[in-house]
Image (cartoon, rainbow over all chains, first blue to last red):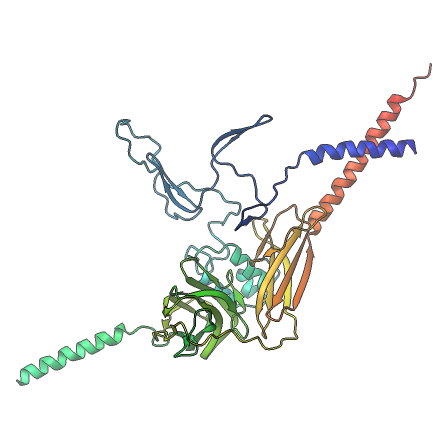
Length: 173
Length: 291
């Protein structure tokens, strides 16, 4: 009995160590929106409180071009499929700063589209509606002849394959 | 004179042939917006405009966008009787009043007036309503993704929103006693991302909402709109989908991520045995040393 009690106490102590390691991000809302399941993704610089100091780097901004007095930031994976050569040298003249294009910054997003994406059936460089049409053509077919279109490798072209195509959807504007 | 007539004939022939080659989409589908014509409606009235397709070449996918004027407010989409089986992101509207429709059908369509989606509008202010198709692309069901440059019916909407005109509201949908059909399955991509893929359809009253919630520890998250596919984080061990049709009937399905469940069970088991080991060591250290 005593050893069981001690086991439970020890288990509780260990569990508290694991529980303390998790940080929950709760939803936050305003009068006309709710941000669901947010993650901590701070901007650049550092933030402090009485109990912590958090150093951070800039996360992935909104897709498109952001520009300031001396920088241009192109954000979005594959938004710029033909990256220009990066210029890492800052402008020499400090008296008259001008925007310097450091080339496109390719942020690695939470999902990575392989360069030779399996869902790009027509090899036009994007998994899009043409590939969707091709997949629908082979829908519910099985066998080695349609292995190329069977994205989840269950030997049949079915709706999970379409869902995987939608996951890598790039071309919609 | 004779020489002049010959030259004129040649010029006209060249012009006609040139004009002919410029005519595109001889076999291309035609998309149209179908609604009761000649309507005069009071502000507050509601009506449905159906996006339809007609053509002789079998098509199985489309990418269409259209814009409507500010006299109208878009209040919803009606997919009852739609040809479309799978929507990429669902019918949606942007803040600039552009409706975007991207989807496909398992069974290629060829014929006339095939319904893609009904757009429900409400008149908000007086004026003449206008619709413009910005983009019409169809893809043939040939296994090669061949694009057809579709054409849009150029009929100008003859809907007038006028104070004092009849107030029209949408008719109640026909009774639908059949729940939607929902099929959901977990799948994993090549880069080990877990997706919840689902197929939902209701041929009678259409699907009005598909929602998902997930469970990481002991409680469910809030319901949120589900877009196919749903990205499932590794920490989630259960997910539930609910599909609601136009009659309010529901279909639900719950899936379990067994890898995550086994991982949690293993963690709890390891915790238990670690605690037991700590307890044993503690007991032995506590025992008085015998002389």
